Length: 364
Ligand SMILES: Cc1cc2nc3c(=O)[nH]c(=O)nc-3n(C[C@H](O)[C@H](O)[C@H](O)COP(=O)(O)O)c2cc1C
Image 1 (tube, rainbow, N blue to C red):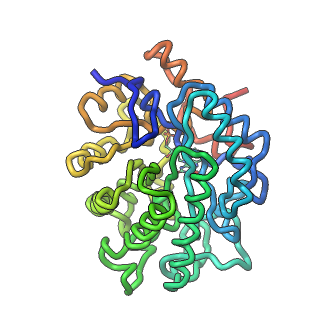
Image 2 (cartoon, protein in one colour):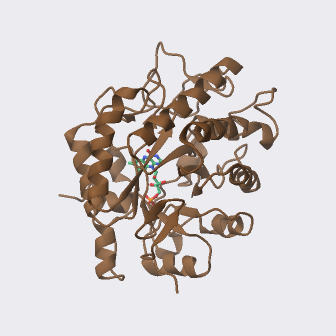
């Protein structure tokens, strides 16, 4: 029988259980993306709390492009020293930490009156209203290098892996999305073309970090709107990346650059009212499992250990990404280790999105 507390490994990355802390933009870095004591403490609480591995909140790879305020940065070498302190601290508590890296694009709260923001095509973002610059091939090369250099810094800072953010409507997800990618060159059109920038970024990251370093990617199972990435296309992307050597895929879903997705509770962080709504991308994971062999992390609405263990024992997934419940209870993994029937307190209400430091609104 498989358990959420099984030990395993992804390459040389030893994991003490099957629980990953899902990435959360804490909004607690300095304005230039550098660490603060407050941010460090959040990771310390998590590392002490028994989780197998932590995905950091997304860190931006280009200095001139910060999709959300007070995100972590990884755009130059000045970050390496402070992140080494972070990774050493996490390792001292027998946990692991992987940095998620991103170029946000038009899915942003920052306004950008003067800065040029890249997009696959000049299509205005439905939510932010930002009109991007359609990327030239030079811009694409610039971004590919920015990602690869950021990944090398991640490795030098002692993180246990690097994760590309290819989900939720940020730039790479927009490339995959027919509505936002209306290019007529080799980066648009067929899914093979729409995934090209991601494949190039992956290959360049791999060249920089070497064949043994764990590389992850978070991707939408589908975009959940007409004109978005479909499940079949998502599977194609994952298969190509698997062939190229991607080590692990994290499944999410919902393109947040789209009103219909937000309005209909179809984004990555859904409101959940009853148990039947938990682990909401499991249907896709079941399909994906029959098509690929790389480890799958299922993220979104994982709340009950019995359902998670059912999915493990049906051989649907390998790992679980859990975000909001760890905001409320950073020591949730330790609580489950003591009592598997312990009920996570998170109400999946999304109140945390609107608090200082992305704390739980009930955490008084
Ligand atoms: C406040 C907040 C910030 C988030 N920031 C990120 C992020 O930086 N990167 C990312 O991939 N997902 C981000 N997410 C989405 C989560 O990683 C996760 O996919 C989603 O919350 C579903 O998992 P859950 O039901 O366990 O919360 C964020 C979610 C919340 C609530």
